Image (cartoon, rainbow, N blue to C red; front, side, top):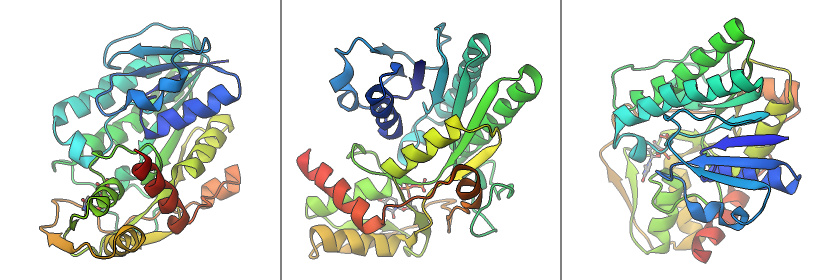
Length: 306
Ligand code: UDP
């Protein structure tokens, strides 16, 4: 089977590629390295089963493929806010291109959506049936609306062209290979603590996230791809943690002497995030297993090695 992984040099894409090649599939990785890192896929560059296409997914592409894993899009708020118009283009045009390719090849396509589609949720935890509470005009909107559009477009391809779509709503994910300058909270806090610098929290730190270890997420994504279910499925950890407690945990693990400094809160920062994963449990028999304590150990080790 030939798999195309868009954004294959990123955290999630590169772990999927490892898994696919371990199972002896052929893999084409498309990445423009805007946020992905060549280091994440370098070990496959000389493998005959692997092909790298260095290209932006907003450019059309013609390939023969059986399955498409569509991850390409900057996902860190720090990164996607730098060039929001391009972030929107990546979601709109990039997803259109990937769906056209799936349609042409009769290929199955898994779209990486996000917990961001729930915005600043008024329902907690968030089930797939919740439509979200989204500000359409904030600085986060380029990503949030982009992901909502991905889902909408994918469902239209299913309804009109019978394209074989799958949709994963991915909650915060972390693990080895996160870029040290990624800008997201776990990489920032680990990098700051390793360098003996203060840990900077935006706002009080009472806001929560539920962090899923990347290996768990990969198992969930594979199960969605292999399922017969076309509608969105939440994938994330049940372990909800405040950002302040995350800072304390990382500080304790790396350097308890670093200070915690509170900065001004970010505009439109969601206050709570926790997936309702009943659907994944029921349909896929999937649940995130790795405790944050253990996942952080492995991630910190990876940061120290780099
Ligand atoms: N955050 C923080 N310090 C940082 C980076 C992030 O306090 O250096 C907070 C941020 O305000 C948010 C949470 O951590 O409440 C998660 O942010 P991140 O950018 O990792 O992802 P998000 O879930 O917001 O997309």
